[in-house]
Image (cartoon, helix red, strand yellow):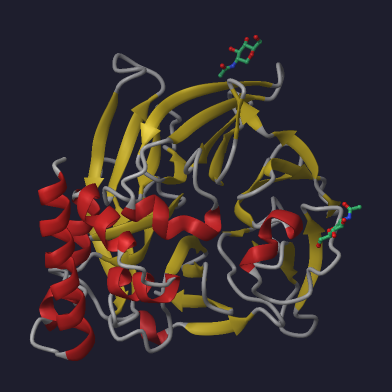
Length: 373
Ligand SMILES: *[C@@H]1O[C@H](CO)[C@@H](O)[C@H](O)[C@H]1NC(C)=O
Ligand SMILES: *[C@@H]1O[C@H](CO)[C@@H](O)[C@H](O)[C@H]1NC(C)=O
């Protein structure tokens, strides 16, 4: 790119930023879009606070249906034991928890650990943990200190381990490393810089080998296997897409676009029928869409010296909201549930369907939501 283009884009962005900060005429440019057919129902969810913690990113139930379990920002994995007992500490991913006392201390995440995606191995009852800083970890059914499974692939350490799914039939774990450059606390940089260093891996439990299946991904995030195991979905946050990697059958090894979403996807979870729930961190305003598809614009925006909060609100929209999307096993959008005004839920990270209820997580909020349908 020529330097005149950089200057021009910086001027455009600076003007946009000034417009945004001081006037309101361009509201729609930064407003979360209306999604046709969406139902603004999620505000009826009830919430359970994660006492003394924030950011329950992923939710999982064990093989007996107990839980949910969730990983929070101070590095702990908590288990919900019901109304009376509340949350108990189940596991940790780091042996050194000196100073891991504040609910949210991003500067300590590499010390305390930051558990993101969680999945139980139904055969053994072990809980696998994608820790953003410490790699793939595992802890037995009674919890405690998790042990290391794997921290690198092809000699390249994981920098932002994010999510996984387990194939019990094949005895392998599929998991993502969102970036080989930026850590979790710098996730806005992954989005804005146009980073394309994310990878999808396969861990073979019997050989303990890691294989890189896909590389060059733009913020690979949530992972979910199809019900019959024939394909794997990976949410690519920056491109607002769900991509599909065929594992078996005539297309094995091929990648295609499974769904294009109206915002930035986080985790993907399969429901008992074989459909998929995708949680959007936020819908993409026209501005966010433009920036995320033009990395030079994102890079120019970064040069303007905004702090994290400003960048996040410019990007994720000034109006926090919650959007959950149900996809068929063919990738068609079946249902869009929202809390458009963010009355109850905001910045959701995962939707787990169980017994007619949606259990809803958030990487930023201090609570989970439960929505009955
Ligand atoms: C534990 O972490 C603290 C930083 O929070 C560090 O100062 C200390 O050296 C660490 N201890 C060990 C045994 O690694
Ligand atoms: C895992 O490794 C074993 C032993 O080499 C092999 O037989 C099996 O096919 C591997 N599984 C997958 C899914 O790659």
